[in-house]
Length: 38
Length: 567
Image (cartoon, rainbow over all chains, first blue to last red; front, side, top):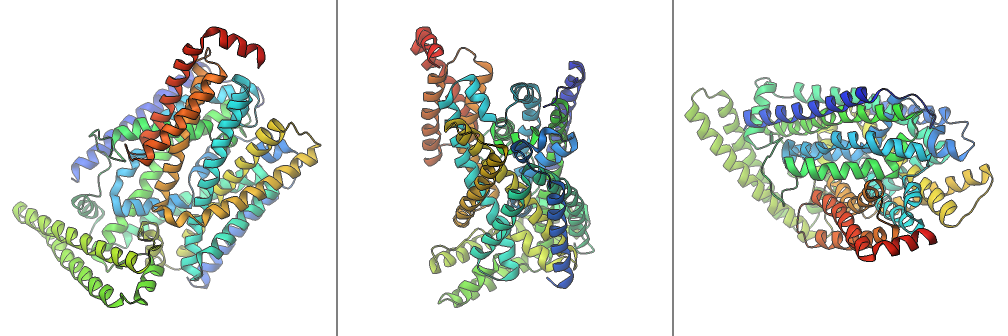
C-alpha cells in the first residue's frame, strides 16, 4: 500500500468510540423492541 | 416469471458483468489480478467487503431464518463492529507494513513456513467448501424457476462466475461488487416496502409486528446465557466477535478485499463503513422474513415451500396420506387466522389474552402436523430435503411480487452470490499461487507466466467448488451451514494470528503443534455437540493460545534459541 499520512490517533479513537456507542444503542433499541412486542 | 422479469434479470446481470470486465481490461500483472494494484478508495473497499460477506445465502436463507425463527439471528452480528475496531488497530497496519499479498505470508515472516502452510491449508479447505455452498444457493433459484435439475443450474452458475473472475481478477470482482451492492441496497428497501404494502388493509405495520411478537418472532435479544442456545446476546458478542475477527482478519477472501485499498486510511475507512452498516442491513433482511411470516398468517400458505419435494411426494405411494395431512394443516391455519383477526380487533384485555392462547395452541398443532408431513417425505425418499427455509422467500417473491420486480430481486440474489463466489475464487487463487506455488514450491516466472498460473488456479478452484456444491443440499439451512463450517477452522487460524501478534516470545514449533491439537479438539467438540457452534471460534482460539504458551514454557528458552538459529 502507498504510504499516506493517517489521521491523528485521537481522530481514529473517536471513530472507534462512535462505533461502540452505535452498537450499544442498537442493542438497547432491539432489547426494547423485543420487550415491547413480547 | 414472464418476459419482463426475464429481461430485467438478464440485462441487470449482463450489464454488471460487462462493466466489471470492461474496467479490468488492462489486467496484465499478478499485482493487478490479485490486489487490483492496491489503488481503490474506501467506499470501494467497504462495499467490496460487504459484498463478499453477503452472498445469495444472505438473501435466501436470512429471510427464511426470519420467517421460521424470528429476529434472533441478528445477535450473530453483534461481534462484528468490535472485530472491525481490532482489525483497524492491529491487522490492517501490520499487513500494510509488511506489504503482503496474503495474510499467511505474515505468518511465515513471524514464525516459519510450517505455520504458514498449515494456516493456508486450513483456509483453502474451509473457503473451498464454503464457496461451494455459495454456488448451490443461486442454483436453487434457477432450478426452481426453470424447473430443471439442480445439478445443471449449479454448473451454469459456477461457470458464469469463473469466466469473469478468470478474466478480470480482483478488479473485475471489486467493480462488479460496487454496482451489485448499490442495486442490492435499493432492491432491499423496495422488497421491504412491498412486504408491508401486501399486508391486508386492516393490518398496519404496527399490528403486523404485534402478531409477529405474539408468535415469538420479535425475539431480537435474548440475554440469558445458555451454552447450547445458538443465538443469544453473549454468543453473538463473544463468539460472534471471534468468528468475525477471524473471518475478516485471517480469511484471504476478506483480507484480499481490504488490501486493495490505496492506503491504510482507505482500508480502515472501508472497514468502519462495514461496522456501521452491517447490523442495520441484516436487520432489514430478517425483518423482511418476519413480514413474510405475518403475510402468511392472513393469506393461504403452501404446506411446504420446496415445490420439487411436494411434487415428489404427490407422485408417490404416500400421496393419499400427504393429502389428508395437508388438509388438516390448512384447516389448522384457517382456524388460527380467525383467532388472530379476533385478537387484532378485540378491545378487552382478557379477550385478547384468550385469543392469543388459542392461536398459539393452534400454531403448535400446525407445527406438529407439518412435522408429520416432513417425516412422510423422509419415509418416501431418504435423501429428501426437509428444511424448506431456503425456499420461503423465493416462493413468496415469485407468487406475490409484481412483474419486473421479481426479475430484479432474483437478479440481486444472483449478483450477491456472484460477488461472494468471485471473491472466494480470487482468494483461493491468491493463496494457492502466493503461498504454495511461489512460497512452498519456490517457483518463479515472468509476470505473464504468473498471471497464467493465477488464472488456471482460479479455474481449478472453480471446478472444485462446483463439485462441493453438489453435496450442499445435505446441509440444511445454508447460512448456518456456512457459519458452522467457518467456525470449525476460524478459531484455530485466529489463535495462530493472535499468538503471532501479541505473544512475541512464542516460537513456531510450539504454535504449530498447538494448532494441530486445537484443530482436532475443536472437531471433536463439534462432533459430540458439546456446545453451540459460535463458541467453537472462542474455544479454538483460546486452545491455540493456551497450548502455545504451555508448550513454549515446556520446551524452554534453549529450544526457542535453537529454533531461531535454524529458521
